[in-house]
Length: 300
Image (cartoon, rainbow, N blue to C red; front, side):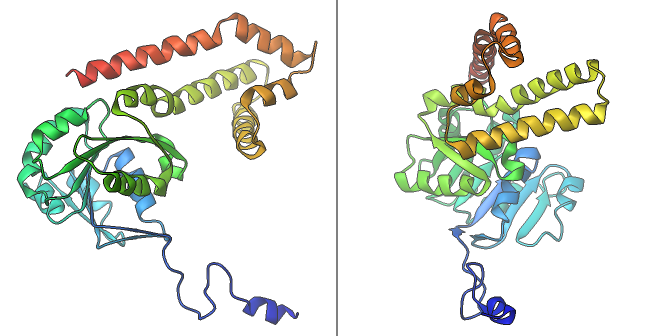
């Protein structure tokens, strides 16, 4: 086979007839209320080439400047509530899925604002930490279903772990639709709502725990004479490589740790210090504290 013949062969991305590949995922009309960090991370997944959304995604935000940042983005119409009091109601009219990604303190007022503008059969998805399904359902008509979600910040790079929980009015189809939506930014775990706050203390807050460990190990490297740039390269590369190996190997963290920890070696001595400091118990206390705070938020 010649080079020219090789080039002419169809690929997975290019059908034999030369037409554009079909999207891997089709989603219905979507409104995204709130264009903060998490809202934009979800939006980036929805705008991936493999995703086809029915009509432009209607995005609203309080700030005109923030809405203007999305001007000209293909597949998006953005508006600001500061200059257009009807922006939220117009965004949700006719939308099959409505993502509520505003700050928790703003949720109830927003739900009251959009309640009678929602289409019967719409699925309202909470992306607001600590706000319960009961709160959403109390402020929305019975013709609308609710699904609560807890994504995390790696959604920005398509590596989120998102927890989702069904509401009392949501169907299996509703939950499957929300699962497909969040799979555009990573993996999805379905749990009862009673477990969602606990999930938030693991995957939701988890990136912060990892960054704190990276900060601490980087500082240790600097103290041992490495420059800031060298320390960052050593530590960031080590964390990234270790995480990738964990995924690729199919082994447990314990198995991989034992592989690195030679008997009577340097790593064994270091790990012993961390274990003597009660690291597992410390993570237990930290996640308990996060869970207590989540319950405080849920209680208002």
